[in-house]
Image (cartoon, rainbow, N blue to C red; front, side, top):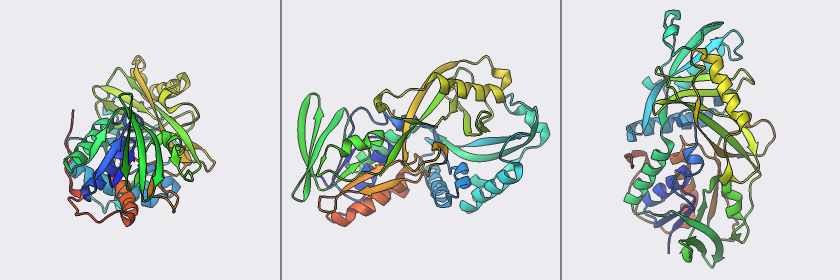
Length: 388
């Protein structure tokens, strides 16, 4: 009998596995493929406060992100590192220097004015050192600091930390069904063409874009939130920028696009468009690739000869509340299942940066119905080491 069984081995799932194990609970994670095989290996690779979320007045989310960034910089220095970010402002850039200055100052305020929140305005003589960034109609360049990570390695490191605390995980273990059985869940999963059953006092659904498919296999059938699947695509070019990460405004629609060094290449992303297909078959479309290439060439005309070497796409789960994908809220939603069933939580959305905080919030909900166990560790203080 487990205390907690988690469906889905992305960053949210392994984060909850770590938090549950740290609180002394017998924990099992089931992943249908490999750890971080879905969205958690297809992000923009950033551990950041979300500067653009200030535009939508998501102050609490930005503050939480900056707090978690601070913890990760301390606890995972080999996996999460500060990088210089550059925001160029051109004659036709929609976000004017005064707006950016206010946003960056607020960014600093929300960190408590830590050193990592410092920012500056580059002198004009420094513009020529910015990797060939076009200076035509350039009016100003801001430089600030945020963090970058390898999302797949970070996910594996968190699961390794959970395992050290006693959590178990199974890969290539496909969830089949869960049925309420008195005060527990009877859970079936398939591994190596063999169907197996286990019991758990609680169940957590962190299946990402498969979240609704998992809910449909649970009896009694729990309510589901209205959501949209939003695809974000990235490309990798066969050249490298050296100076840092560029936070650009796509000329086509004024969306934010990041251009960054990545393992000796250049990573560019992301797009945002509604997705209705099979999450297992998601890929970057030719239209998205062109959009990202055109954005890059617009700002870095000296590197127009660089070609796409690789592309990938991931899917985010966002509220179905109308409006554009770009303007939708990014806060994580934790949905509780039927009150007359054993504890069930579903995690909708979730940002890479705040996975630990989300896990702690989820466990605060679950522990009300779980047996008391002796705490083994505090996740805010656990070191994370790279696992190859």
